[in-house]
Image (cartoon, rainbow, N blue to C red; front, side, top):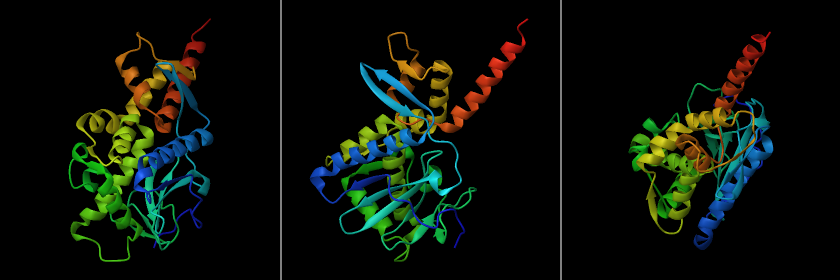
Length: 275
């Protein structure tokens, strides 16, 4: 058992109801929108991005906060059982689960535990050692979602599978859908389509150019727009900035803080050089 920040698990900021197959895609959309909306509400930095006449609010994740208010919960339910996914707002990232019985489990990493009386998930949650295949080949889909839900909602209530393949792939599926999906439009779209009774793979481009490039995409956007908090895509927009503007729905706080420090230092140096 670990000593963590959370004694009481916070109320969910978003819910994904998978009980009605006919509403699965719509419920997923509602859940992702609620996650993005919560980040926008909690942060002190957000951009207005206009692409093809459509305006969207794109938040930077909230400041690092090692108190309960720095954590958030996404609830997944099938109408009978419940699974809670616990994350940190600072990176909008997965840290652990609460199963249907209320038992708590967390990833093993260098960060301090966030839930009191939590046990181990026996993984760091990082893709190379988490998934049974390459991230680019990882699949999301209706049947995989249902299986992943039941695996994690009852986690710890039965013997774990050999090599933890079933459990780890289940964690991976929810990370892709409910943590990468809110960050990236293309990941959201393949997950949304997968709930319409199809099965999709993450894909090489999404894996290499988006998921593994979240920080760099965010950094490139910050450096271009500087202190302007609104941006409109046009024909003269550089390709790397176009990629960021058309794919990002939540941006990196780590890279924002680095950029602010860098920009502030540059401004200070410029001012000091004047005579």
